[in-house]
Length: 133
Picture 1 (cartoon, one colour):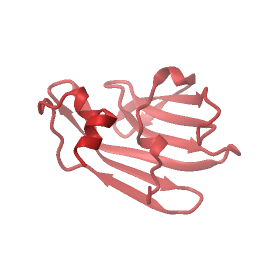
Picture 2 (tube, rainbow, N blue to C red):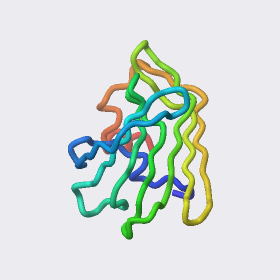
Picture 3 (cartoon, rainbow, N blue to C red):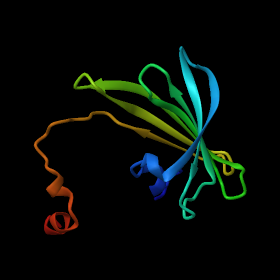
Picture 4 (cartoon, helix red, strand yellow):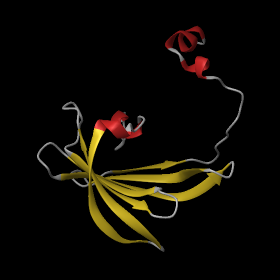
């Protein structure tokens, strides 16, 4: 992908594909966060586990540590600049992925986000995307 983000990091996160362990709570900035460990049920994940800090107000992920196949810290994602859309959807506008093993970093900035634009799920099928090429 050419960055510290992998496809797995940016794909949809399906809750049932992981096992969870509550590790405790601690402050994260001005908020209180739950600390959760998630272990993939699938053997093909690039990670052995993730540890996430999730705020107890809006359940937004503020930080995630990703551990490699040897169990060593590989990367840390820090999520900031949350904005609320349509009175219900919280989205981050800054995500920083830092690689602990290479000391490289990628910052993903979002400048604008739109909802209810008229797009339909059928616009995102393989056939629909191939038609637009």
